[in-house]
Amino acid sequence: MVHYHEVGLKGRNRDFFEGTLARNIKRALRGTGYRRVRRGFGRISVEFEPGGDAAAAAQRAACVFGVAYVGHGVRVEPALDALARAAVTLMPPGSFSSFAIRARRSYSSLDLSSREINVAVGQAVVDATGGPVDLDDPDATVHIELFGNTAAVYRERLEGPGGLPAGVSGRMLALLSGGIDSPVAAWRMARRGAEVECLHFHGQPFTDPSSVRQVTDICGVLSRYQLAVTLHLVPLGDVQREIVTHAPSSLRTILYRRAMLRIAAALAEQREARALVTGDSLGQVASQTIENLATIDAAVPGATVLRPLIGMDKQEIIDDALRIGTYALSVRPYQDCCVLFEPRRPATRAHPDIVAGAESELDVDALVGKALAGLQTQEVTLPPVDR
Ligand code: ATP
Ligand code: MG
Image (cartoon, rainbow, N blue to C red; front, top):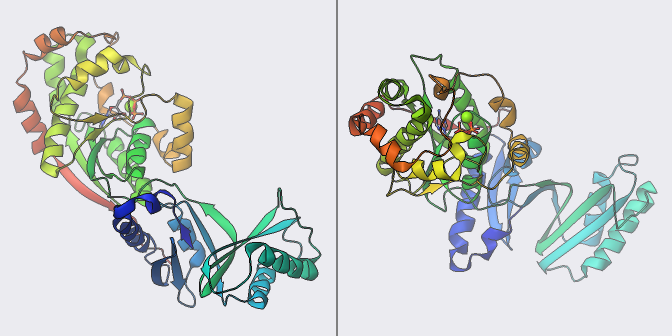
């Protein structure tokens, strides 16, 4: 049983949102042996072939954007004795210290209230196990869902990520560094329904390929949520060398960032992506003062640059990264292109005129073109469950 909150509230878009969600769930469940995915009664239900791996499927569905929670158990007739038998089977004696039954009905053919069902099924579990009922803080909860002329009974409930189904908000291009922040930024926009493509700048041949491995692995984690992630790799080393040769060292980082955004904006146009996404958080490092962010954005006047982490503390970002599953990958050592020729004293308030003056020494359009000529694109997809 897959439940969603927000997707159900979208008025006339509801059908589109639910259809997208159901399709995304099917893709996430490949290999689990599901028989069919059905929409109805404000939820999505998935049935399995004998031998299907419903537990693995529940784990996978609980990552899909738009999902509020997932329950995995059995489907039975909407009759008290069948519900009681299912509940008793799910609750072997000794497997819990206290319990509650929570029935919910929507348009059910069973003519009993939720309360009557809770009491009768709860009594059956007490008779079978002696287990104490605790309605306030139960150790185990048996959920019963009654809808139409069927019922589902399950014990666990997996929390989903919430948000909107991947793809309903259009395409965006996220600048992915391999660090802790940018994967969280990409994930947050994907959770709001964006189809996020990722762009990584590497320093090869001046650095080793470790950053590319890093972002490829991170995209593997993001694919649990978005199912498929397009990853664009662009070499930045030549651009950086030009900047190092022609511009004051204190402006290097800002000029790198401006070059990154220009290249990203050009690629976004090719890909029909509506916004750029970065992992900046206000004041975290010298390049992320509001003055410098404004100077960086001024390089791409026509673009929309989204910074979903702008108001977050580092610890909050780390907590997100842990929850998403990217943290352990991000903290591995890797060679970041930005540490090439890193200035000892980066400017914290670079004036736009000074930056523009320094940039006039460079043939910016040629550099963007040259970097994009080295573009490599790969698809990172969630593999089917291997049973
Ligand atoms: P992160 O943890 O995402 O690396 P950070 O705290 O290290 O961020 P910066 O190095 O200033 O901060 O980078 C700011 C943002 O610029 C990143 O979040 C990312 O969106 C983008 N960025 C930085 N380096 C790269 C890169 N090599 N490739 C693509 N985007 C990058
Ligand atoms: Mg970084």
